[in-house]
Image (cartoon, rainbow, N blue to C red; front, side):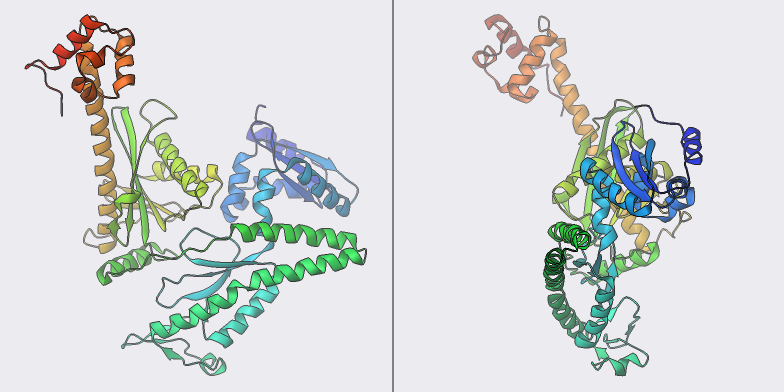
Length: 495
């Protein structure tokens, strides 16, 4: 299905009526990806094509807008009719983005970063793979806020709006106002004592969402018994979505940080880049090629500011042939984080791209295509070691003796080394495989058969004349020629 160009799409929006209805967003293949209801079709649909809206909303909505290539509308007589029709169409078509948004729209989560010296509890609507603990989802936002307030009194924990003061002896003063007396707990505590409070609060929260799920289920049953079918149906949908979200909710714990100096560097990086969490897990991507040939990429992973070799990855570019760093970056970022998402593994705290605005944009595009919220993402441009932000902030240059930039350089240089090593290995392998080109009487079909049988030039060289004859098309005479060719004094395989 050909996509409408932007001008025709906007013209189609302008022709919509000011009446209730349902709209169906379609992708480039004509598939319905989102169904929505509207009190006023023209006003509602037009919001999807306002640049300011795209920039201000959640990445999932930006991803949806980027996928829209056409839309259809169905006019109805009233807003309740639109609501009913929307539900029927969602059940019929099961659009991708309705499924993705269901949980996010309805419920709040509680987030706590236990790796922080003084963790604070906050409620959020979206869960990131940031190694924090998440509790919920909780269907009643008002009750959740009340619960957190009660927890503050019951356990002596801090909420997001608190600003504890670190004292000279390493302890913390939690409050510097009247709340210190109101909440009835010791106001000056050690880190260990405060973490004990956090552990008790977390244990309390673990049972809350399932307790409320039972209450909702019972309320749904009672509504059905009372023949309040619309209410029962609404509660049924909420219970279903809550169960689904509960099954997805996972908890992540951070790796412990054992080195004080490494921790101070990570804290410096967090402060410099205004990161929401301590960047314990860093990943960096680099592209390597020789004039558009042997295009490969690397991903290296640092944990607690140190190389974590077990998590290194390298990639051959599969989607195209040629010299295009942007497309290569988009491909490998998408492949790597698709795998992590499929395996339900946590994303890193910070992703670093070796390159400038173009490479960063390509990486960001990969996350949009995956329809997952990206982790913190920056680029490091080599010429002046300029930090490029993916969120539109101005580029940043740090003094070269700054610990934060030095950590990023070590990460980037390691990615560069790993990519170049892989590139060199591929080139060496290609050279080694090409040595048989010089053997008269051995055509391409038999060369391929040899490589398929033995896997490498080294193994062919180690094979006996009898072993070589097991390959289809290679008789005793040719087998002897191959053996002799690979064992002459003048011949040596490149290292």
